[in-house]
Image 1 (cartoon, rainbow, N blue to C red):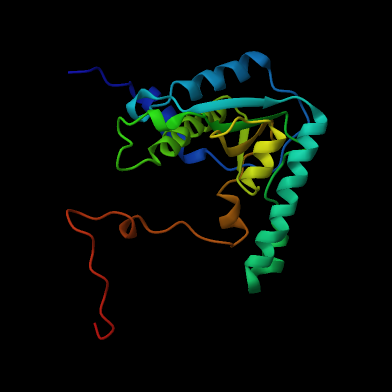
Image 2: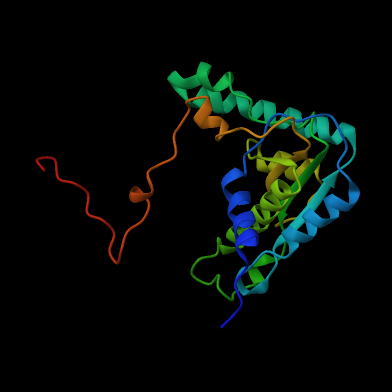
Length: 219
């Protein structure tokens, strides 16, 4: 039987999971290149369907490009607020990114030429996106263990960001990742603190064997 982690190792894994936060507030301080390399390597060791490794990771070091990406996010933030109707003002008060303050801005993208990968994707082609999400989660947990904050920004027009990054046809940006030092981690998810939403009870997310029947009106 495979050897388990010892108690302290196992506790560290769970601590990273439960203390990971989607961070939007950063301290203007550079990230150690050796730490950044470890985080990117952690992402690259994520599981992927059919071992296709569909992630491509870009590091944005050009300040003009960073500003252009930020402007793209800001335009989409306003459009999202408009689409939320009565929650418009509430949404506009939220801080949804830290792109201009974070030490590193990374782009997580799907590679081009993914159609040739059929293994595990023939009936569920979006498994390439699931694989990229695993890479992001690997990096997120590793960042927490390194004492760095990370935030996932998805408020952007895909084609606009694709053009800004000069991506080839078929490649697709998935996330703009803000990475850097923080004064402190949020004690709870920020959207819980801001009363935007609450974590669902686990009992509502888990079922056994068959999908739970919807309650009837008269029950």
